[in-house]
Image (cartoon, rainbow, N blue to C red; front, side, top):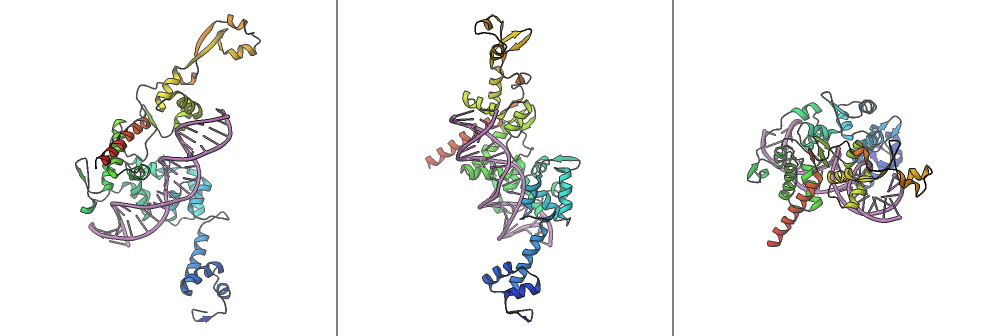
Length: 335
DNA sequence: TTAGTGTCGCACTGGGGAAT
DNA sequence: ATTCCCCAGTGCGACACTAA
């Protein structure tokens, strides 16, 4: 074969001569039959491989690096665009652990975007075409003027779906996910989110990229794990109680758990359980002489108030979702 | 409480079209 | 060339639930 005017007896010889990996060259060449293209492709693949070498270790892609170091891949991507070395990026990110912007720490770009009341998708988009964080977050979003993107929701006209997301403070991914996971149409998906948001008392201007499990006096709990950790109870205890007692949400479960009491025995001013008394040498008849008292099963919960300012968002969401899905089904039945 | 199980959704990723 | 828009994924860890 011939490459750049020079003749070679084999691909192998060519690969050796121009220092391009043989297997990639062969792979491409036998599919396209174009030697120029194959060389470019093979060289590029080699270069790409090299670009993901970090501390003498080869990675498939940025995602695997992010995974290996517990970092946000998006942050690495954004910095790679600034031509920083991979080493430097990871080092810096490892030190910070989270994304720092204007002196505040955020757990990922998505959290940062919503903190600035942006739909994360537009921030991802902007980063994709090279915006730096500052610009991506602060530059106003241009108005668009394309009638084909216009959409009407509850009588109001929005220039695009994205504008509707911004106005209602619901990230597009939420709507998209609802549509794919529950097979709803666009309007029903928006209805479900919007109504949940309103009923939960979350202001429209607050952008949501997820629904919190619950809100307790202004604090959003993203997961049950987060809540359980904070109040000092295991998630399994919470889940089991909920399951066994048929509770509807996390808040009513906690309320019920708070009221749960068991028999205790007062000994020298301290509360002992039946089991402890037996271990201490009491017999099945003598322990009955010890004065009894009713004590809470979950003492760690007693100091919390789960009624005032508590919103069980997941419960509201489930109710609204069921109602809307039934309504949608009813509509289809009538048609 | 731990273990098992199956599902879900977070946080992107990617790619194309068109107005600006 | 840039910057919006749209849609369509997707990996995998986190999750809820259940049982023992």
